[in-house]
Length: 333
Image (cartoon, rainbow, N blue to C red; front, top):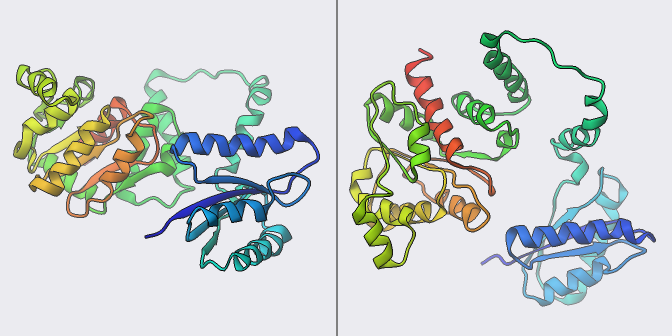
């Protein structure tokens, strides 16, 4: 089994403030992932050194070292100096460790976003709002989003979903963090065409889904038997609601935008009880078990899903995904 350790490497400075940025980055990574597997390291002028951090991780029992170079470009440090230091240090421990160097931060495609954010206030001081006809507001918004989509390698059938999510949230992070099962869109469209039901984890998702084409959109969260079951089993109402539906979910769409517990329960039901929804939209928001639940969803192979990486999501996003599929099937043909 792979046991990974991570080091964030910077050049190092005699200025404490500069080095503290690296320590803060590592602290936030540990907090975000709730895991103490990240170590800071400096090439010179600060500690811990690369050698010290590598030894700490190796002594902790890792067999795979992931190196994140906190550099702008692929210079000599990236291509020669850092790999040589790491190789020599690992050789000295006598332990077999696989090493992977990630791309330096300056090579990330979203470096533009960071620069844009840093310049935002200065640039906006010189801009003024422009009059736009009410009927053109959504079209103009979609044109702007489409211009961003063109920069990315996104499958054609996924584009309407991602576009609608970004339009709903105003958040371009969804350009790079959404995850689709290979049959997600086709099976979702098929289920909608056959007027299959859509079951939701909370009433907010239920309220947000377009019902004009006759789809039954149901949420059993507040049913008395669900409330009783949650109290009896000591679980959340959302989890109890999904359990109560059981094989009623077979062939239908399930949209979860709020409760990680509901998504975890549903994946368990797929794996253990043979429940087979046509599509799972699993995009709960939150900081406790949301990203883990979504990762668990992606372990399914025979049930299609749409999800995302990280803590973002929510009821409006779940509804937007289903509405994008409805629009594709009934309004764009």
